[in-house]
Length: 117
Image (cartoon, rainbow, N blue to C red; front, top):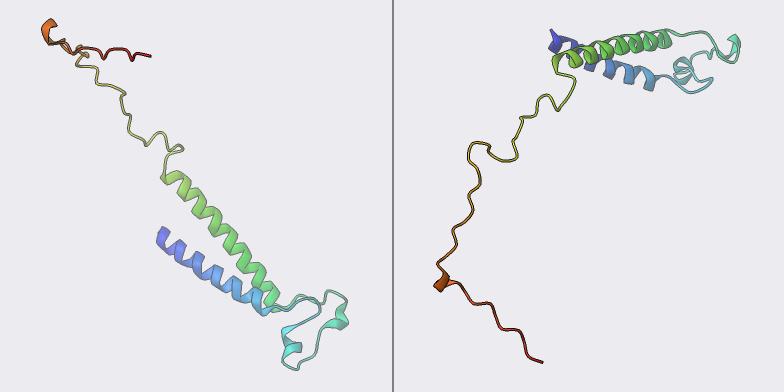
């Protein structure tokens, strides 16, 4: 089910990009670009075109799908990364550390003699 929602989300985003790119800037209409009549007579903003309505509709679908995917992603995983990390102990508690045995007294290495001045 989520794969279908993701596919619809991608298609909606592509269509939204196309719809925005087809719209002109201020006082420019797609009909005027192809030799039609400009809608500048309806005031500085003009009337709402079909392309603008499609853009608003696609934007609404995009937002709803984005929120749906975000909610699903938050429910699929736990809230913290630390809950998923394995716990490592600093040292094994079962065996105590033993001191190293000292060599016999006759086999002790000699300390170097201090340097003479």
